[in-house]
Length: 322
Ligand code: 8YV
Image 1 (cartoon, protein in one colour):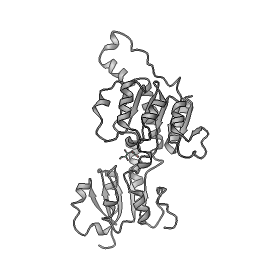
Image 2 (cartoon, protein in one colour):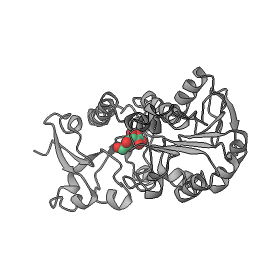
Image 3 (cartoon, rainbow, N blue to C red):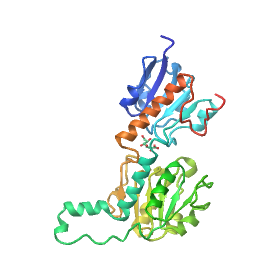
Image 4 (cartoon, rainbow, N blue to C red):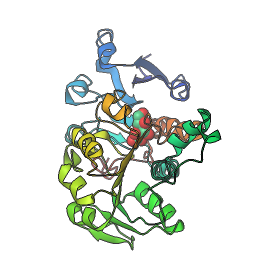
């Protein structure tokens, strides 16, 4: 009946989201932008909320089809796949899923850093191949013990990574546009200057146009031949062809990558390199953390339609005044 609330569930299927709503809601589920074209006539006009369940493009061309949409509840802390400016201009509230994934992503970042520096994946292959029977594994050139980390980004996840590095007695500094409140580590307004002063970059800054190719050839040159780059943010933040060239030429030593420019496509050149560790975008991908993220996507929508303030609005679309 007309008092039901029509929701578009857009993106990969998530059982906790599909099963999270009472029969007060009518769910319309579409996985891809191509699938959306099969939405029956008249439905788009009724949609009042959208759950975006993955990194599906939710640009103004998509959003313009839903004149009555009030809220977009997006899965993931990063929302570079959503046109937040369009949402703000059109009075659409956008929520994401921060906090519940912070420690998980920070765990992954530290693990990826150690695995890259200490060659865990190569060493694992060494055991399996039986080579250990012939001779011990060579000492690793990489170690956390003689490193200094420059964080590219010092938001909630960056600070959780820095805390882990503090506990590990690894010196930390950071680059971000503005100093982060309450952070005592040294701030570098200039990324090149920081890259010169450290030998490791851990990239944990939002994606999108403002950070596209932020870590470029010049930054890699400044980092130098001991350089290790860990990316747990977005593939777009690093100039990927420049990274491949820098790894090949020895401009830097190694890289640990959880994210790529054209996921799930990973350049063959990277796959054939021995000095990289490659993960399939699993920073937050445990059952416990993903369940918490799914639940937050559901809760934000339910709160809104119950006339309450959703928990985690993005900065561009504050709750105040709604
Ligand atoms: C998800 C992420 O893999 O939170 C993010 O920003 O990148 C990950 O947690 C992503 O949202 C895709 O589902």
